[in-house]
Image 1 (cartoon, rainbow, N blue to C red):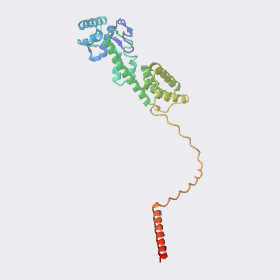
Image 2 (image 1 turned 90 degrees about the vertical axis):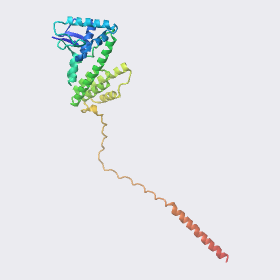
Image 3 (image 1 turned 60 degrees about the vertical axis):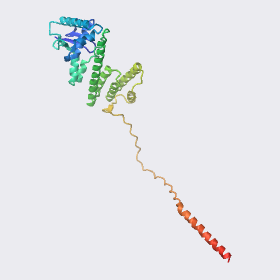
Image 4 (image 1 turned 180 degrees about the horizontal axis):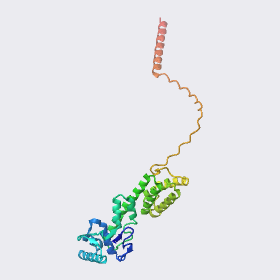
Length: 309
């Protein structure tokens, strides 16, 4: 039966579920297997392997140590298919060894998110370090980040698909898995709360929300997300066991409709006061004043004329 290299949640080489002689105390050979295994069918050059693991040595000595390590691994697991394939570029022989990373990548590429999620049992090479190989440490960080982001995307897609099928409890399970994968992912916590409230599980929603808010305050010293605080208030106000409407996560809660008063005959409205008459236009008034003055002057002149005769 082929060997198996576990790279999620640590780094270990087993055969039929039992540890091999290549234990954690022999870290460089294990790291070599992880480097070659992660390269997949592309393989990785000997020079790169030497640079990752023995960068502190001169190139000639590093290549010599690499050659010796490859020889020891071949001898230790001889009797079956060749462990390594290639000469300049090395790759692991799938007839001699399997790797959880290969299965994860294969299932994720095929669209089987649930299957891929079963392979991801922890962060890539979690807890495995080589203090004297900084280039290897940098490579591990890059791979760990890449795979963690891919896992997050898979879990979120599974949760959204379950919500789309109106399966809030299944959606909650995937959101919960995502919060365990990344406890600081506010989007995952929000999705979890929406799913639990839709399923009518208010106690769990409150428990997870309060745990997340406490973690955020303690570890990051920041105020929890306003949407999470809103959901907590909403959960506290809802009777136990009352579910949200389906797809409540996509629509905000509606405001309650105003109460309708009983129909009665309306009282007659009071009469409006009459509108004031508009003032007469100013221009005709001025004309009458001028005409009156002129007539008065004519009469006065006529009277004076009579007196002088």
